[in-house]
Image (cartoon, rainbow, N blue to C red; front, side):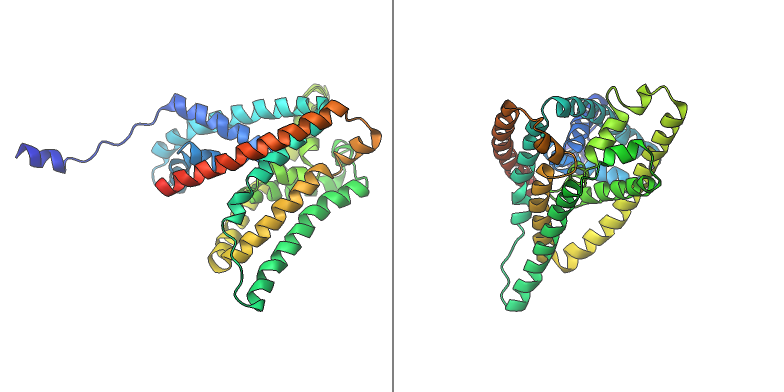
Length: 319
């Protein structure tokens, strides 16, 4: 009888450790701020992806329970993102090519995420359906960086001048960044870097030249309005992109991943050739040691990210 009672007793629910979840949230925040590194990938490796997704989806049903579960992650995410952004902002001032090389290495190392889903078409029609989205996405991602570089568009100057169209463009930037987070192998920060908005936004809210050091009330207010528009764009991006990606992955999975591969490869080019980096090449402001360290870090980050992706895939299969 005792044995029967033991067998029928439900397994006790695993208790969450708030302190540990704050630490995990910090790593998620850091990864979200770094171009080329996906917070979703880190969450899978730390085995907190499913609990977070489940808590978000069931927030309305059990608000108090799921809110308390998510709160430590949110606190850690904010702290991690702020720390990373401040460090990146200072790092770009000292060694822009070094950080770009590091981030590009992370992107290249994540290529297996997209390549693993590729399949060759059996007919000419299938092959055409695969190659067209690849070429189109490659040209779009590479073209965005090239156009902003060659047209010498100083987005940071326009942002600081508060040009009216920048209020619309900041919504688009938030939409693009959040939407990119839905796409496997692509990070939101990387998409901002591609269109040349990563550093302008970073410098607006961090560093000695941020709005909070301006001493001007109107500058701070308009800066906060821009931040609000960025968040609104991000929310729209998540809602729209999740539905679009769900539909594409359901109906045209292989072709979609060919498109994703094109976006990743084009983005790698744009990370080195955009409105932020191109002037540094032409002005000769990048030191020789910066090129050397950046090249070394590119290779090391590529290798490290490659094995990390293999590790996360292994954990997913085990789960």
